[in-house]
Amino acid sequence: MANKKYDKRRALFCKLLGESKTYKGYYKYLVTIGEKDGTIHKQPVYGRDMQSALNRLINKELTYKVEKKLETNTGWVFLAWLAVMVTPAFLADYNSPWFLLYVFGSVVVLASIAVWWYSYVNRGE
Image (cartoon, rainbow, N blue to C red; front, top):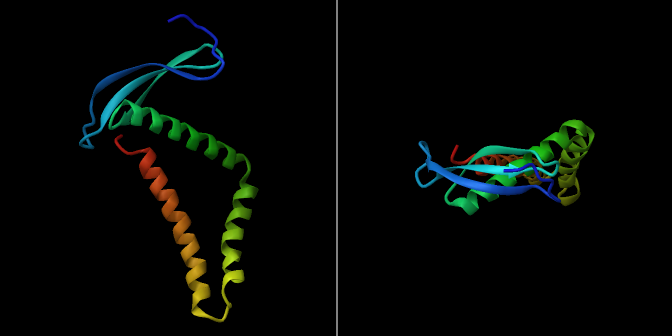
């Protein structure tokens, strides 16, 4: 393929390589990606079908972008964590046992969402 500049990133070609060895029902694809600057590279990705594989590739790259932003802006992460910890103070009386449930529950919910997202993005590999 010729190096052509694109207005946005594009999946140029997707090839089925075979079934996943660790997860039944998942397949491994090799996606050829054309970048904005015209460079082309290939990336392996897993999914139940080609559409789910491409969706997972997009989600994985979005997650990578967010992680890079969070590395440079750790102050915002700390403020968000602090807001989650302080919010229960407005929802319940601090002398009641519900206060502890809200504090620890909010942390557990955030951790659960993070674990679910990580396992969703990396499923099939």
